[in-house]
Image (cartoon, rainbow, N blue to C red; front, side, top):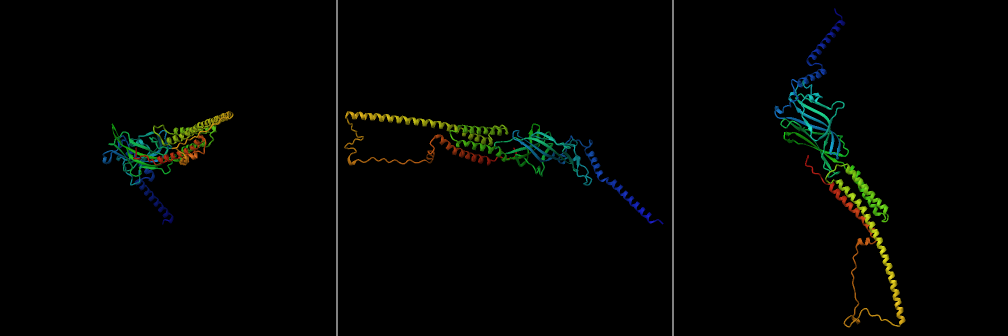
Amino acid sequence: MPSMSDTGSEAAAGVGRLSALLLLLLTLLCGPVSANFREREKQIIDEIIGPANYDKRIRPAGANDTGPAVVHINIMIRNVQTISDVKMEYSIQITFREQWKDQRLTFDNMQGRIQYLTLTETEMVWMPDLFFKNEKEGHFHNIILPNLYIRIYPDGGVLYSIRISLTLSCPMNLKLFPLDRQQCQLLMASYGWTTEDLVFLWKDVEPVQVTKNLHLPRFTLEKFITDYCNSKTNTGEYSCLLVALIFKREFSYYLIQYYIPCCMLVIVSWVSFWLDQNAVPARVALGVTTLLTMSTQTSSINQSLPPVSYTKAIDVWTGVCLTFVFGALLEFALVNYASRSDKHREKLKEKLKEQKKQWEMEHAAALEAALQEAGEDGHTFGMKPLVSRHNGGMGGDKSRPCEIHLAAPRQNCCRTWLSKFPTRSKRIDVISRITFPIVFAFFNMAYWSTYLFTEEEEDGPK
C-alpha cells in the first residue's frame, strides 16, 4: 500500500505537467505576450511596406479609390522666438502634423491589441510634397534623435508629426508704429501635386494649437485666423493653407524708451525761457545740448526700424519734439536780437534827451540875452492875443468855453499785463513760457487721440 508521501508527490507532478501543458497551449495560440506583439509588428511592417506590396512613389487613392488624396493638417505653435522689424521676418517653432489614409497600409490589429505601428523613417512610405511658401530658413531638431515619427493605424490612416524651426518672411505696415498690430502668415502648399491629385485641408477640431506658456518680449499674440490660399499657375492649381497670426505690439517698452525721454528733452529746453537774457553761455549751451540729444535719440530710433517711404507715428512724435527744441533755440536768438535792439533804443533815447536838454539850455540863454538887450534899449514889446475876437465871433458874455469830450480808452488785459515788462526781450521770454507748453499740450491731445483710436483695417488675411 503506497504511503501518503508518495501520493502527494504524484499529485504535485500531475499539477506541474498540467501547468506546462496549458502554457504550451497558450504559447501556440497567442505566443509570448510582449515579445510576440513586437514580433508581430515587425511582420506586419514587412508585409505592408515590403517592396512586393508597396511602392512609395505612387500616391494613395482618394475616397472610393477616386479623386485626389486628402491630407488633413494641424500645427501646434510651441514658441515664437523673434519678430524682427528691420528684416521683416519672424522665427517660430512648431509641431507640424499631417494625416491621410492609404488603403495599402491596412492590417489586422489582433483584436484591438495593436493600436498603431510607429516608424521613425519617412523614406518608407509615401509623403505629401508640402513646403512653406514664405520660408527663409528652417531646420529639423535631431537632439537626441530626430524629433519625428510616423504612425500607421489598422484602417490605413497615417499620422506624420515633426518638430521644426522656421524663419518666415512677414511684410509689415509700420504706419502706426509703435501703436500697431502686425499680421504674420504661415503659408503651406503643395509643390508638385495639383488639386486633381492632392488636396490639403485644415483639421476640423483645433487646426492650430498654441502652447499655454507662450511669451513674447515685445508682442502679444492676440488671435490667429486659418484660411485657404490655393494658387493657380501655368502648370495647374495647387492646394495651399494659410494661418495668419495677429501680433499686438507692447507699448510700455516704447513709452519708457522713446516717448518719455523725448518729452523730458522738450521740457528741459523750456528752462532757457526762465534764465536771464544776458546769460548767453548758459542759454546757448542748454539749447544746443538738448538739440543734439534729441537728434541722437531720433537717430537711434531710426536705426532700429527699416527705411520705409511713408511716415510712421514715431516719426511724427520725434519730428515735432525736435521742432520744439529747435524753436526754443531760435527763441533765444530772437531774444538776444531784441535785447541788443532795446539797448540801442535806450542809447538813442538818452542821446535825444541830452540834445533836447542842451537845446533848451541854449534857447533859454538866447532868450535871456534878448530880454536883457531889450531892457537896455528902453523898448517894450506888447504881446498879441493868440485869439482875435471879432464882433460876429466869440465875444463878451456870449462866448462859451470850448469843451472836448474824449472817450476813455478800452484797456486790453494782455497789453496791460505785458506793459509790466519794459523790454521787448523780456516780453518774448514771458510769452514763450506760456505759448510753448500750451502748443505742446494741444499737440499731445491731437497725437494720442489720432493714433490711439485709429484702428487698422482687418479684413482677414492679406
